Length: 145
Image 1 (cartoon, rainbow, N blue to C red):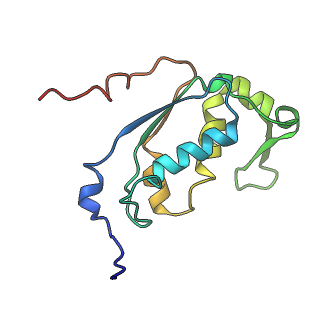
Image 2: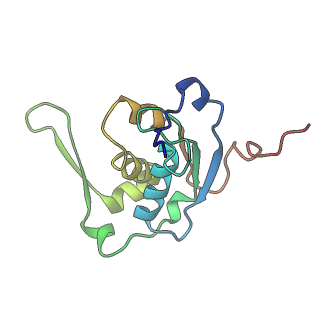
Image 3: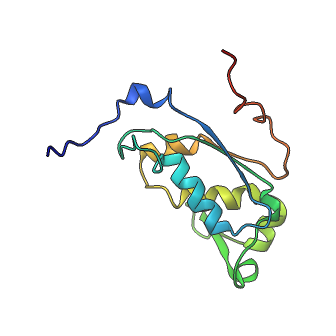
């Protein structure tokens, strides 16, 4: 019995894209990020090829109402550095949640993707919204024949 590997053609990958909606209301941040990262990479597809961008579009709504386990809201911090001496910035998760909860979801998903150029292309297809209104509502409507 031959065991041939399937290699998805890169030109075909853009045609096969679908849209997925994740309502983050009451869901745990890590579970949302894992699901979104798998959909962005296309790991649930039969045609998955790790070096081809064969993933789907993902729309995450209600990210202001995500749930965090443990004491993450009080203990977790986000670190950034400007590159200059003394340019370190440490932002607590609670403050980041008040400012822009979309960034929390974006960072969680980005850190679950591989660190390469392909992941940056895949991350473009992630759309995050604070409430349940988004402009992508008619995307999955069935096509007229």
